[in-house]
Image (cartoon, rainbow over all chains, first blue to last red; front, side):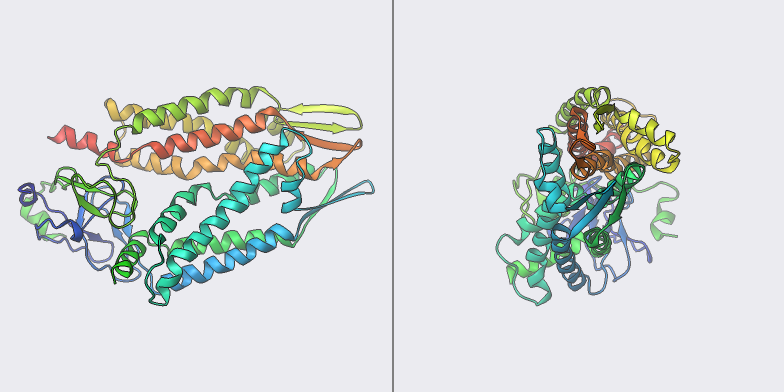
Length: 229
Length: 216
């Protein structure tokens, strides 16, 4: 612990830079940068401000006013949109008198030959299942907090799952894939996009806005205090 | 100007890491614990001061991703049947076809997502993993940015896999026209997944540890 006198752990705020010069090392009052392990003193960061790591510049905290409520409301919205994405017609295709309608559900169900089967599973997982599980996990973990209720059992595990699933939710990539597919097919058939496509676009927008309100550290701290009380 | 800077007269204060302080930090939620604690008290994640198996896992997934990247490029991605004639397209073939149809922008997007990103990612991950053990020419901040770019952009390679899945579930007009995915579609999807796992296995704290070791 003597090392604490030599060094100067602190938290650095983007707007008002105020290093903390206390050198007590009580683990519960510290926060470590997940990127570079640098210790900082935990302190209140004003809403709208961003606390960055002194060494690697990673954003440690970026609390926003009313973030919890917004996250839950946006997650519920996204989940409802997901229902529309799955069941409404996604793309309509017509070529020389033949017509083909397809919803995302059709696309998942229509594994006509062997090679398509694993692909449709991948699409189902990356575009529908994992994003939906992630949204449900967020609602489950944060939902009770906005009503000042104690956190539900396994809320921490649910929120951890939501964090893990983030890179595997690929709805926005799927949209670009749809756009490329439409260009490729334009020569041989007429394609029109259905309501499910627009629901997916809305879902991606809503999810992106929701994620900008997510301050990991604030949520973890709230989850911790709500569990204790 | 920080008061601190004046006191030290140009000598930047070395920052203390959790490991130097004899503490263990949770990479999931930032909570700091005393050494020896197994699971994070806040989020329940497994704690380790440094992930000692990190590099092993990085290289294992990297090699798996590279091996399966070859069939992904050599075998057909898309098999198109129109009136009994069969065309097979590889990833690069698909890009060339788009150029022939004068869809230059889309050709650019597919080329970037399916060829530039995967190749760049293999090089970037290998460089990051190599530079942990050897002297790096790139600064810590540079490598940190490189790591973040790899993490952010890697998943976008999936575009072509989704294109194949959409086309083959959409274009099913029996004899007139139908599209099937080739073996490369699955190889490529797996290659993207493996390299994503490789990047996720990398513990970015190792980038900064090298600097620490050099100053001591």
